[in-house]
Length: 506
Image (cartoon, rainbow, N blue to C red; front, side):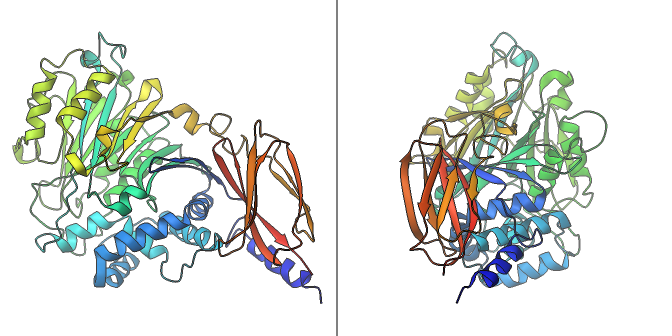
C-alpha cells in the first residue's frame, strides 16, 4: 500500500507557517573555538524557529546543564511568574519568538517534552529572578564584567582619529556547560521599525547581555555587586536583557531621528519602577554625534531609590578625559564613587587619558581589568570601522589569554555576499523532486569549491552522507531510507543550510 497521500498531507501541514517553515531562515556561519556564529533573518517567528532548528542540541544542553539546576524546585514557580506577568513582564513578541524556538527544536528532532517557551523566557530573565528571590540566600552570582570606552580627545592622535572604541569583559562562572555553548547570533529583522543587531552570549539567549546594532550603538550589562537590596513583588519588572534588546533592535527607539546612547537611556527610563536587581549598563555610539553624553553612557539601575542613575564623563569619577569606565560598583548612584581595585588599575593605566587607540584600549582592559579564570568572553567594538572582535574561554584558558576572532559588522549585517545570508551561497539550493519517491537531485549553484551533505531522520540520526563534492549538482537514491519527513544538511565554505524533504517511499 502506498503511503504517499497520508505523508503528503502531513508534509503540507508541517509547511504551514503557523507551526513551522518550509525553509530555515538561518545559517551557521562558523562553529570553532567554543563559539558558534549564527545568522538569522525574517520575522521574529521565523528567526526564532531557525535559531531553535540550528542550535537545538546546544540549547537543550545549556538548559539542562545550567538553567534547570540553577532554579531547581523553583523552576515551576518561575514559569508561573512569567506567565502571570505581575512580578516580571516580557513583551508578547518575545513570547512568540520563544515559542518558535521550541517549534524549531522539535522539528530538528529534539525531544522538547521537558522544555517549553516559558522555560526559555525564564532562562532569559535569570538575573531578574536572582534579584527577586536569591539574594542573601547563598545563591549570589559570581558575574562580574567591565567596560572601557574611549573617544574624542582620547583617541585623537591614534589611527582612530577621534573615533569611538569600547572593550568589554564578560566575567561569569567558568562552567563547562557555559564555555561549550557560547554563541554570536546575528539578527536581520523583516519587521518595519527594526534594524539588524547582534548579541554574544550563550545558546538559547534571545535577549541582549552583550550586543550592538548596524548603526554602531552597543550595550553591555554588568552586575552592580555592591547593591544589597532586593526586588519587590508586583512591580512587573522588565528583564534588563530584554530592555537592551528593544533599544538595539529598534530603528530609532525614541524616534528623535538619531541613534545614540539616548536610545539606551530612554529604553531604560521606560521602566520608572527600576529593575529587579542592581545592574550597570555601558553604552557607546559612534563619536560622530559630537556630544560626550550621547557617545558614551553608564547607567546604574536598581529596585530601590535612586532607581535610575546615568553617568557620562562629565561626572568626577577619576577617569581622565574622553574615557569612561564601568565595573561592578556604584559610582554616581548615591555619589558612592566606590572604586574597586580594577577601577583604580584602569585609572592608573590611562595616565592622562590621551593616545588611547584601539590596541591600547584593548591592552588596558586585558592587563588591568580581567577577572582571571572567570573571564568567559572579551570583546571590542569600533563602530566607525565596522569592527568587532571577540575572544572566548577556550582550551582551558580564559578569554583574555586567547587570540580574538575579528568580524566586519557591515558584512555580518549584510543580506548578501560575505555573510552567506539569504541572498548568498545557500539561497538557491534546490531539491527536486520534493516530495520524492526514489532519486533526489540536489543543486548548490553558489558553491565555488567543494561541499558536503548529510541526511538525517526527524530524530537527528544520520542516514547517509557524502563529502568532497565538487560539482554543483548531485543525484542520489533514497531507496534504502525510511519513508517520511527527512532533513538534508548542506555544508559549503563554512556555511550550513538545512532543508526538509518528504520521502514518499513504498
